[in-house]
Image (cartoon, rainbow, N blue to C red; front, side, top):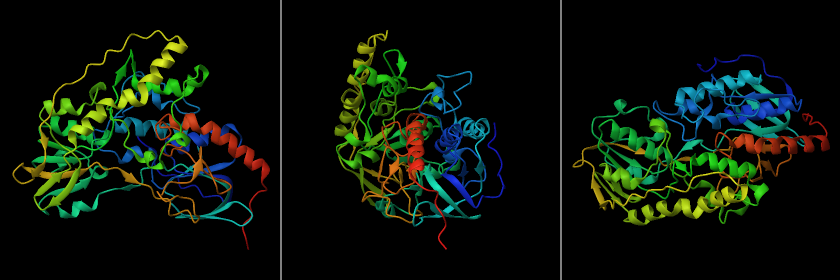
Length: 434
């Protein structure tokens, strides 16, 4: 289904709840608010529905199974729950979700400034006028500003450089090999796509961990979601945001997974065995010569150990205590030891393009209040900010590692809606100051 066209309905002057962003998180909150009988409107800066998925490249594939697109008020109803949607499918599903739950979305409406009002509530300055709101839910995700490191400026001007956000397909790139900087989910999916297209591919490997696509008879994401939903009943809980040893862990790359070609493991050792060149972290660039940190082996060993250290015991303990009938583990390691690149002469290697798969930065500068910490992360506890009436949904590690995923709003949203209702009953309705 194609994403819907723009809605030009007039904005209200005043609304109980303002939801910012009509991706799956914002629409999930709309569904929950409708269930609670709360008046609200959802602002979306794009002129069509589909959320941030519209920004992905042509062959983008979800890393979570199709069943994970079961949203509050609308379970997955397609024919292939264990498959993996492509970009247009997931964007179309998000667009359809708005119709299913009757979300009051104002498309083509950018929120430019949000200002808390004396005595409570907010004034929202949008591209289509002003409105006041008693409560505001920011559901704009955590992927706002593409990040490119300063050393990019040192690379030869002969070489085309682009962030993964701007990549669309291999045919749009200049002929030649490609250096991908970053080995998270995006970097590895692009590496595989370009390698399959016949391109020479090099990857500057970072710190992203790796988990198996399937474990003990199920997709790994299925186990993780089940533990999140039911683990506490059996004394098994995955770490929450409050248990992170360092706030910077919120920004760690997600474990590498892919749904490409039906979903499979993404093991850099196997990538190397198949002909992809690997270096460690990119640490220098001087014209045609780029240099790596010499930490490839350490990064590969850390990736190999990641699943055992972070998730395996939680899943195995849950299986045992919940009495789940699951087969024994059948993980097969890849023993290939890649030859590590210390440096790469881009011209000699035929590299015409560098793709920066280096993630995104947060941008909440449009909120006219001290809402973020020194890491630019919004201060919140399970989505409830320190500013009365201001909430977040869909943030990285808002409550757990799943918070920014497709299932995150379904896990975090009901708690947030309950807290919003409790706080609304304690506070008078905000009034514009004159």
